[in-house]
Length: 109
Image (cartoon, rainbow, N blue to C red):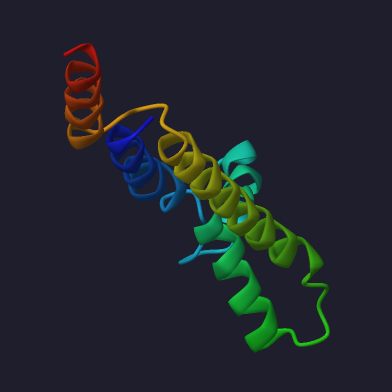
């Protein structure tokens, strides 16, 4: 999505994921499905992980760790795909197109 993807990601995290993250209150205090949905986003998983590690050390923390690892792996994967999408010449820059046209003009003469 290019630069628009950065804006979409920020809007999704700030305006959607933060309110349903259950960081300030337990997820059971939120409306029925949203407390559980919020745990699938990084703010919700991080808040739950910190809360469980701080107040309930013997609680199972596998789910928040898996959610955070999945988001990190997804971000790295998308970054690598974006890098190779532009590095392979899919979107040539201005200097490369000028150099090609100069080379073609010198060969034609």
